[in-house]
Length: 126
Image 1 (cartoon, one colour):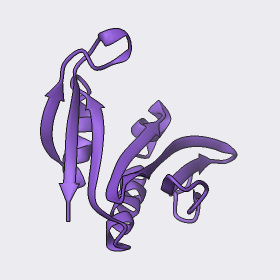
Image 2: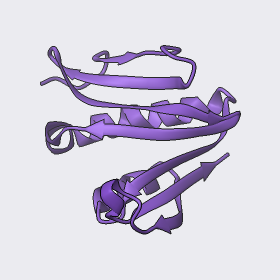
Image 3: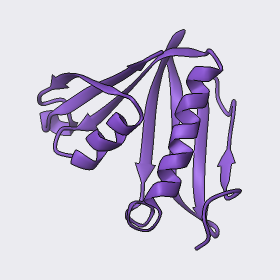
Image 4: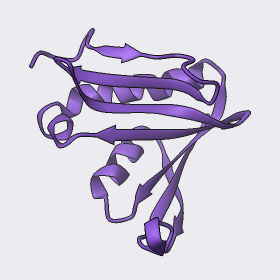
């Protein structure tokens, strides 16, 4: 597969609460997607779903596109604060969020499906 340049689609304004989003394709298959949705005026929640293929074969390209999306969400002035959740045991997610300038803000024990798992809140304020 070639680098992602020109191979991601930016869907602005699909829905009122889905302010920014991207999908990364390998041919006609989506291998990664993510975005920022409005929680309140000035506050957005970052989210992503990454396939094993995206993480294994194209981590730098996916990271570059995710950073562009997060920076744009804040540079456009829509969000002073971005926040994200990750599972405590997902070390890669912690490292990825820190790479984007997020800081750990808190732990939420038994916050997952069925009251299982500990989740972490990260925030990035500009």
